Length: 323
Image 1: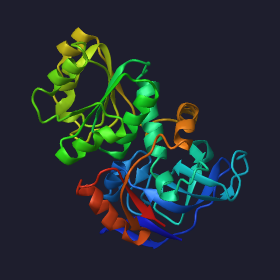
Image 2: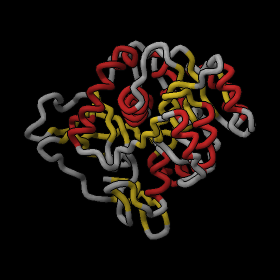
Image 3: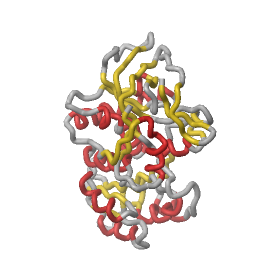
Image 4: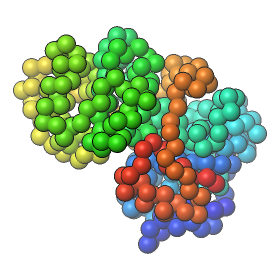
């Protein structure tokens, strides 16, 4: 089969062996796969959890049809239309743990649209509801809201009953579009007084829950913007892996600062997260109430060009490979 593989000189599409599903896995005939930031690191030769290095097939999520199922799989059968987080998704075939997969809703959702959903759904539902303990009526800020995951995060927050949803972007054009995806107040973190604007919008209290995809230099301002007993969930570090941390402010506000990643979670933990997201969100996804814009599509043969498009940071929404 053809796959986008990390080579000595970058990502190249070449022939590799077709995978076979283990007892708890499904084999997917991939029709579309979407890009995530972690794919850039893998494509550069770095590791992302258990995957990485020369010879690695790039990709973290895909959609297609079930080609075959492992001996222990009972929820899927050949021919089912599915979407799933799956290592090695930039290929004609990929295997996925059956506990991570979802059947594509029978509401005319395309494979391209379906491929955009799995990582964003499990990441943001877990950040908001699992780790973040979001309650109806609370206020939410999504840092890095113009990413695909961020756009879905704002919609999920609204769906789960948040009273005020805020999102940040340092790009003027993208920030202007955040309202289309559930954002009540768009924030520009280049403004030195952005935290004051968040506090003003929350009646002086500060925001209850921040889902932070930026980290780095916004950490102390996050705590300034947070309410007493607020929660900050760190899901990404697009703005840097390190930064100043005001320990006194952290203690003064009694903030819960929570780090999350799927890289160190067991298969059982991931399955539980996927099940919880499906319980809360699937009716909204089936009803078309939660969706993501597709910025651009590329054929699998142009996987390197798709990754370059993501690296240029000129996109809004998701970038998709069509297989």
